[in-house]
Length: 512
Ligand SMILES: Nc1ncnc2c1ncn2[C@@H]1O[C@H](COP(=O)(O)OP(=O)(O)OP(=O)(O)O)[C@@H](O)[C@H]1O
Ligand SMILES: O=c1[nH]c(=O)c2[nH+]cn([C@@H]3O[C@H](COP(=O)(O)O)[C@@H](O)[C@H]3O)c2[nH]1
Ligand SMILES: NC(=O)CC[C@H](N)C(=O)O
Ligand SMILES: [Mg+2]
Image (tube, rainbow, N blue to C red; front, top):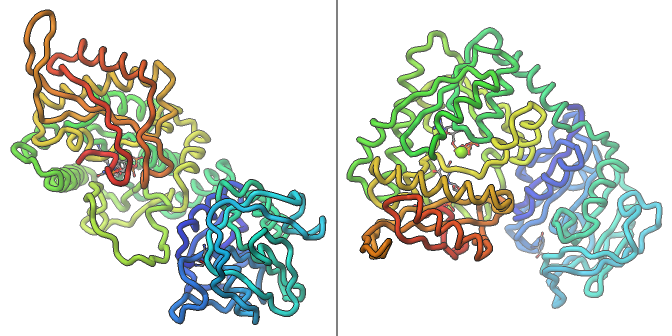
């Protein structure tokens, strides 16, 4: 990749959306905290300054020498980025009684051939989120657009060494109807990008790069059957073939038949993966444990133990493969301070420190949707790439209270009926994640004139973009009626089914 855009982050909640939108225009980009500035790099074709929760007039607000960057390359300021630019060049930014949050109508007064607003309609819906307003532009700056409430919704500098634009609205937000077009104009018309960021070019360059990094050494990697680790492993496999040693652990809390199915898929993909049956070890250590955090920590610890034991059997391992993706590594500017732990996410994150192995992380710079596109390019089956997320601690955090083998079997059966029904009725792809939860309560029922006293299953389905917030999915009543019936009829031990209608927040997606 010979071109990239740098996004300097001032802590906006939308910074990642800017990156996603740029990538969707087939241009590679990276997010850096604003204070890292712009290091010399011929690949950098332009800089975007993000929004921020700060006001440029706060004494503590993040600051940057914008003019210094414009000496080197084109710059686009978004919201705070635009306000900071205006202020730095001598304009006036102030709190105004005309705040704008939400939709606004942009009046585009720019010349029809203006490089940034070219082909943008004369009135266009945009998304605003600001309390400060640019009240006066610096000398040598021109207004390109206004809204009913503000005099400067877009501007351009006339005499700077490189092109300099500012937008008060957020082109990266979906509700800015022509926002994508504006960003594309910036990338292609102003920065001169060609759009060389495609799944095919990524695969080609990454495999080359992996060959150089790994040389003749061996790589070991934990695989979960999920998207990220599978795509990462497939890339490494293309680079080094059977010198990749995959390990997939049956922790006893996978879904029904999942262990065998995943191993079969890996075989089809030509991956060298060893399935390790550690069910009994997990069941033994989980016996009697009821606290969600304790269960999570036991599982995380056992994954590492099993993995390290397996690694000892392979000679000459030099590297550890990981399915790390970009949201895991972005160093965004944190304005809210360290956040509290809601749940300890299991993973093998403890491994790199303990194993003293060099890391191979081919997906470090990709977003999830890009990982899926790369997966398609690599010929990985769609069913795997578009599977719902499944947590590493598996069904253990969907069995409330103590995990036993019998309860696992019960939940696996109920979950299988639920997933099958979602697929059969074409609803699977319309929800972001779905699963069944086994409650630690028995209740009375009647079946064939006989009294029953059995467990309850809760069904959960959510819509979401990234799992950070989620809405309960409004599944059709007919569908719920049918699944409830099927679960109770097919799974002995369950006589009641309920549907979870809580959103996140205040609830979470998983129950533990
Ligand atoms: N059953 C398992 N056997 C071996 N390794 C596992 C297993 N489950 C999880 N892991 C490891 O833990 C990592 C984190 O698990 P997690 O489910 O969070 O992955 P992820 O980031 O969602 O990626 P994926 O899409 O691959 O599941 C995986 O990438 C994998 O390396
Ligand atoms: O790999 C994982 N290891 C974990 O320990 C873990 N806990 C929750 N999840 C998944 O994260 C998303 C958000 O879940 P919560 O709303 O329950 O926090 C949902 O998609 C959950 O399935 C996990 N994934
Ligand atoms: N979204 C933003 O960048 C907002 C900038 C600044 N905090 C304001 O309220 O005007
Ligand atoms: Mg996973």
